[in-house]
Amino acid sequence: AIKRRRRKNQVRRMLWLQERKHTEKNLHREEELTRNLVGLAGGAAGAQCNLLFTEKLRR
Image (cartoon, rainbow, N blue to C red):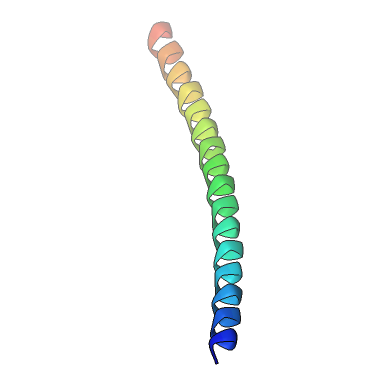
């Protein structure tokens, strides 16, 4: 019975480690995606600001 329990724990631990690795990878990917999105949004906002600024200068 003890052997079986030990094996069960090993399997559980391996699964947990795999899960953790997976989640860490996903977190990293999400971070990259959000950074890119923020960068794009920032670029768009910057362009918008520049447009508004040039419009104000023209008036």
